[in-house]
Image (cartoon, rainbow, N blue to C red; front, side):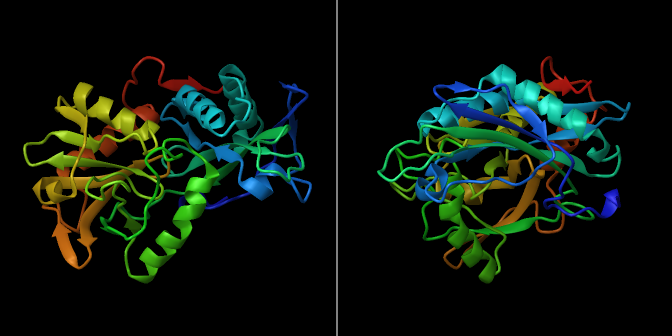
Length: 336
């Protein structure tokens, strides 16, 4: 495989993990080479979008180990998603063992160190039995597949442009805080519309007052203030990004910066020095400007390269993931 020219998309690998829930319990689970999912036409996932998922990666480190980054947090977040959607949680310890087993069986698909690529891991769960009335399914399937993916950016992280749209991402007491498939389905029209208008993504405001910064369709947001404080929006309707939590820890403990999670109002955009999106795919994607209905806010870090602190955060976190920098205890799970 041409690792250095690998795109960010699905590549079929040899094995995937499958476990079924029936009669109130999960079965033992298997590894299979069959990538097909066969469902009844009235399956709960097809009728009422009863599904949730996770995303994490396996990396080849500088010393040749294969590791995953904080998968215990993915396991816990998937439990929270399942509970909110009235689905039976897949036990955290089994989640971690399933991740290990799938990566081990596809070990040859883990890209080499230095290629800029990684093995993307997608756990997901969905209702499988026929459902007609609006109610939770009785049977479920939990699966994990893996796919080698290239870096989100080729040739460096060029700052992107966001817009503040006239669409809402999540209702105040809805499902914005869990990784439900339905959240992403409702964002598709907004992202397609943003791309047609020449923007890379949407910067959503809270739907109750439309005055507070929340997140984008697929990533949390962090800011750097003019006095070098790293701040991130606080809201009960955004997804608790594992990457964002890790970056805030890195900013404070590794870089000695002040950090804060708080309500950030739209009017404060002019006071920020740097902005970036954060998530599993790219770790950090620098933002150069935001368009608010024709009014452009250009961050001092500019459109040519990532801001100084954003770059330090990126370098430190990827250094931890790839074994170049010592990780905090419990952050790295080695695949043996």
